[in-house]
Structure formats: structure tokens, C-alpha cells
Image (cartoon, rainbow, N blue to C red; front, side, top):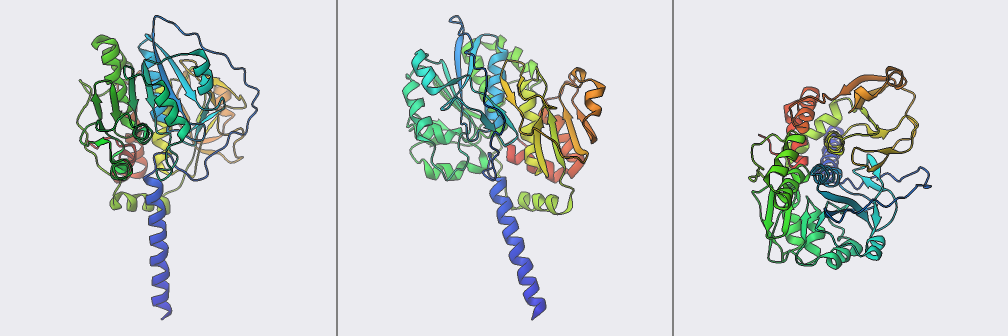
Length: 397
């Protein structure tokens, strides 16, 4: 009897663990224990200059939580055209949390944009929903409806499709989203023309992308339409995009039970590493988003950005970055990731005790997602690397 009872308890425990991991794995933005900005709020706010000769791009952010690659990838890619004013805009003039491992400051609040009377050429909608069962915020939905003229472009990225669908603008028009959330959002917003098998959709001036990593394809498609093929090719080369053309076909593979079991095995039998990314001035936003968003899906023991005592950093294109950790534990870090090792002194490196230093070759010709996946496969095995790809909605081949 005791043996039977023991087996039952283990079975129930296993089911609970599987259910919890499945819940977490399917959320592009994890809704558990979201970090709250703890630093000083005495920011020096400055409005970026608006160049009337350039196209104006608004990238929305939700202060409570926004998918990182969804926001930072288009921010970098549109800036790399050198033909656009690119602004991050949120409801409140306060830090925006990106995938639980970085804070950024918006350029403008909704009310400031309204007072300036700026009309964007493009509105980019990242995943702004911390939990898919929570309806998109009315403030975000209403602001999009206010700014949409019928002529300007909308690019909904990943589960930003939920916010886009809630506006009614996409009713009867094609839209896609993260493969693992497609069925749920289709039920939630039946008036929208949900499609699969593509990395991005386009219906005149309305675009959308599949999950997370497909922000690259959607952004490149809009860039090609706005600025032409030559500018798009320049931007593609800049990020070492691995395909000759903008990849349109998409596998739409979901996080299934086999993937969940792989995650459980990793959590139960692999060392959960404490991972820290060192922030540095001038860091490339696309690269930062790629590595942070990828490693956030490896279920580390902890994952933080750290500034070595410096509270504020400026990225390559002038975005204000705020680390999630003001102090580090006394024990050596399992992994210290540095995107710009050439800009780091040996003294500074030695002041951060670590077991493994992970750097990135600025002259590498590989797409950075590939670099990250190759290392994750070496650490945790091929099946786990595939599972990370599923969570990023990154095609397996």
C-alpha cells in the first residue's frame, strides 16, 4: 500500500511539474515574478530630434512587460537604415521591463506624442501581453486606433497580434502570431484572418509576424517596402541574416509534450546556471536582444544584466538601458557574457569573478541566433537546443 501511495505521489508531482513547465514554456513573456525597477528615478529626460526628412517609426512598449526581441530587433533594424526617426513609446514615462532581464527608458509617453501631434509612418506592436488570458490593455489598443490613419503601416510582432487584433483593424485581414499561441489567439479573436505557414503576413499596409525571432523577417519586409531593396540588403548584411531572400515560409512547430519533457530533464538533471550579461555603452541592440532572449529560454538559475555599479547605459542607437541587478552574489558567476570584450579592461573583467567568460566575435559571419543555439546544444544537448528554438519560434532547419 505504501509503495502504491508513493508511486501515486510521485506521479502527481510529475504531472504538476510538467504542467508548470508547459505553462512557462508557452509564454513568450513569463508572467511569474516579474522584476520591478528598484533604481533611482531621477532620469534626465530629453526628447530626440525629429528629422522631417525621415520616416517616423513608433515602437510600442508596455511598462509592465514587453517581449525583448520584439522591441529591440525592429528598433535596431529601422535605425540601421539611417532613414528613419525611431522612437520607443509607452503609456507611462517610466522604465519598460523587457523579458525580465533588462529595463529601458521610452523616448515618449502616449500623452507626449499626442501633444506633439506626431503621426507615425509605421507603428510596431511587440508582444505587450504579459499573459495571453489577460485581454490587451485598453490604453494600448485605443492609442493604436487613434494613430492609425488607414495609410500608415502597422507591424504586429509575435503575440503583439493580440493587441493588433483587439483594435479591429485586422478584421477579415491576414495575421499570424507565435506558433504555440496561434490556436488560443484564433479562439480569442475570431474576426481576424489567422494564417500559418509564413514568417510574416502582408495585406497592403498591415503586416504581422510569427513568434519572437521572426521580428527580423517582418522588419526587413517593411524596410524593403519603405526604403527599397538596396537599403534592405544593407541592413540584412549588417545583422548577418542567413538567407539570400527574406524567408517567407515558416514551419509553425509548437512547444509539444516532448519539448516539455526535455525542459523537465534539463531542470532536474542539469546545473541551473547563474547567468549575467554585462551592459556596456554602445552595445548593439540587435545582438543584446538575441543573446538575452535566447538564454532567457534556457531556464537558468538566474539571469540578469549588470552594469558594474554604473546605473545607466546608452546603446548604439541611443536607447537608455538600465540593468536588472545592482549587485551580484558573492560567489563566482557561472557565466559572464560580454558582447564588447574589446571595450572592457582586464581589471574590470577580473573584478567580476566567473567560472566561464562568454564573448562574441564581432567579425563572425554567423547570424547570432545560430551562435547562441550552437553553444546551447553543446551545453545541454541537441533536443534542448531544438526546444529553445520552438520557444523562439525559430525554424529547426
